Image 1: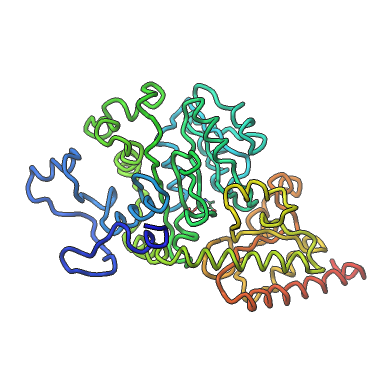
Image 2: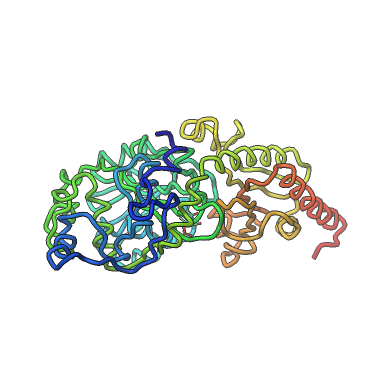
Length: 436
Ligand code: PLP
C-alpha cells in the first residue's frame, strides 16, 4: 500500500464484535482474563492480548501499527506526548555513566532534557559543534549509547544528513535516533536512509488539529542489538524488570520497542489515553492531503515574504540560495516543510507589531495544526534568555516563526500583508524617532 492508503486503512479491518467501521475508542483501564492460566500466559508474553491500558490498548494499537507502517518500521509504541517518546527512546538504552551525542540545534525541551535533565541522572548529553557527521563522530566513544538528531530542525528548518549520521553511528556500534516530527513520513522516511529508531510528537502534523498531545516511538528492527551483548545488555540478558525475558530471543527484530513498552512505559506510565489515540487516528487519516497543502501554502508564503519590502530576511529551505537548500534537496526532493522563519525590518519592535497584528495566524507555541500559527520567540519562548544567548540559539529580536496552515492561500497572504503594514508603520516611527 502507498502511504496515503496506509494512513487510512492499515492496522484495522473492522471491529470483530460490532463491525464498527471507524476504530472504536476502547475507553477501559483493564481487560478480563479467561482464567488464571490465560492471565499468566499474557504476562509471560506467551500469547498476544490486552492486559492493562498502561502497557497497551486496542485503539492505540491501531495507531501504533499505522505509524509503524507509514515509517516502514516493524513495531511502534504510542505514549502521552512527544517528549515522553524522546525520553523513553533514550532511557531504553542509556543509563548512568553513558552518553548521548546530538546535533546542536534541537527543539527547546529536547535540548533541555539532554543538557540539564539527563546529566542529573548521570547521562551526559553531548552536543556537536555542527550538524556535520564528522563533528558527531568526534564525540562518540565507548560509552555512547545513541546518536540523536531531528530530520528537520525546529525552528531552524535545518535538514540532517541522516545517511552520514547513521554511518558514523554504526561504525561505532550505536543506533541513530531521529525525531521526524516536522517532516512527517509523508515527506521523509528516516529508515530509508539508515536511521534505527524514529520518534514523533503526534501532537503536530500527525494529529493535525491541535486537539491532542501524543508521542510515538518506531523501531526499524534493523539495529543488531545481539552484536553488542555488553553495551546493549538490556536486550541480551534476562530482564529483571520483566519476568526474566530476553528481548532479542522473545521479540527478535522488535526487541527495542518491546522493552520500551514493558520496562519504560509499564513502570513509569506516560501512556496515551485511548481517546487521544482515537483523535490522533482521525488526523493520521488525512495527513497526506494536509501535508501537501501545508507545503504548497508555505512555498507561496515564503515567496510572498521574500518579495515584501518590510521583510529583512526569510529562512526557507526551498530557495536555491539558502544554505539549507542542498541537504533539503537531497532528503526532501522538491518538497519543503511548512515551518519557516522570517525577520521584519525594524528589529524587535517591528517584529512585535507584526506579530500582534495577525488576525488569522494564531499567536502560540504549537505547530502542525490545520490553522496557521505564529510565534515571536524573542517575546515568548526565548524571553528569559539574554540577547547574546538568543543569538546563540538562533533567535533574533525581529524573528517570527510561522507554521503555515491549510486555509486558502489568499486569506493567509492577506493576513500577512495587513500585519506587515502595521510593522511598516513602526519603521516610519523608528525613522522619526517616535518609537520608544
Ligand atoms: N519534537 C519536536 C520537533 C517538537 O517540535 C516538539 C514540540 O513542539 C516535540 C518534539 C515535543 O512534543 P510534545 O509537545 O508532543 O511533547
